[in-house]
Length: 275
Image (cartoon, rainbow, N blue to C red; front, side, top):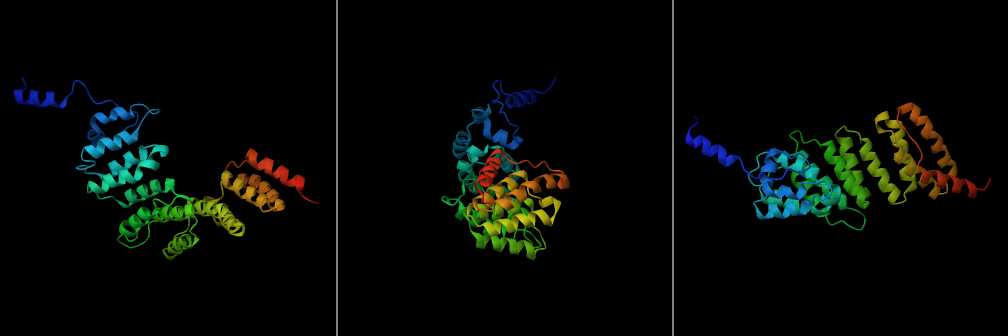
């Protein structure tokens, strides 16, 4: 028979009323820390991560969690429509708990802080820049920039239209022998479109097309630049790009189809064009 102490130990580790099971798979350390608060995320449709936040704020936050990546994986599980309002408070919990994040961790936090950034709302910009300067600018032993970090920062400045900052990070990539990825090019193109900088948008689009198959514009990118051609009264170029979509589909293997809005805009543009 097992010793009495062993039975008592086992009985204390097994609850008659275990904590509710969340709809997502949480890292073990996070699930243990959340305890009974997992009842707030049992159902995908009704999950409320603001209540999880309040629970953690009252119960030592993330203190004692050994692997910071467990915290980051939890942050990544929070739906976009909630984390964009909660991320700064969750980061404060991480900081107050004296958790040291990896480059991957800081990149994730900054990418979530980006969700609410735009021309009219730069609330999170100061925190983003502080995190970059303090933890990421010289994070690697070889002092070379992390391309993921660079891409996230370019996305940050693309959202608020800071072309000088975008240029500085492109120069940083170049100085480190790195080329922009499809994601980076797309962020910059979207910025130029929002600013209605037609020539610059066309230049970036052409670079994406001719640099490599990996940077080939997506269907969404083609649709965006075609609409910009039409808005800038360049119907011929819009029609040319429309033809390009089919040719590019054959060349890259990507399925590129014009959206209904694009087709309607082309039709209106052609109908008003003077021969």
